[in-house]
Length: 193
Image (cartoon, helix red, strand yellow):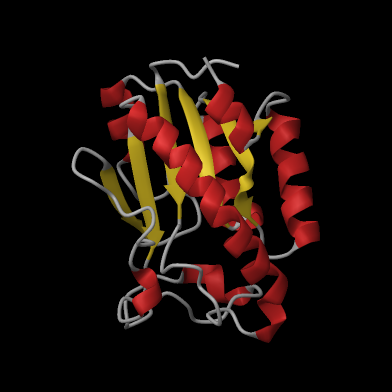
């Protein structure tokens, strides 16, 4: 595997440390997966920083007036990541540094309602590496939109966390269905030419 100069890393909603206790008892599996993925996210981030490749940070934040949730609250998630919450800030272990690109998003996909596409065209990016969470929600929807915008896609499977193990696995299978060589590991990134 080779990481080309036209590659960029997108950190999807790597926010608020390990988020322990944020999702409640029904999301215990998600919390455990998130804790396990953070060290790998840091390892992948370090590779991109060393190579001086574009790093793009996304965080999901909703207004306290709750006017930007749309249909999001119709599913399993309750009110979350209001702009007054300490969990809305970027994770201290992956905080954006000078020269990186921080974004705030209101919906699941990093493409929806943001100027990500303009940035990627300006950077001449054709391959996106995704890390973060949830594998079955924001990572999945971002991957689908990236695919529909004709980007090559790499999801670092041990640097993403799902809302649960089954949901994580199903999402990875769905992403691989779109691009058969899209699933890689942190070791693949570190060993890439």
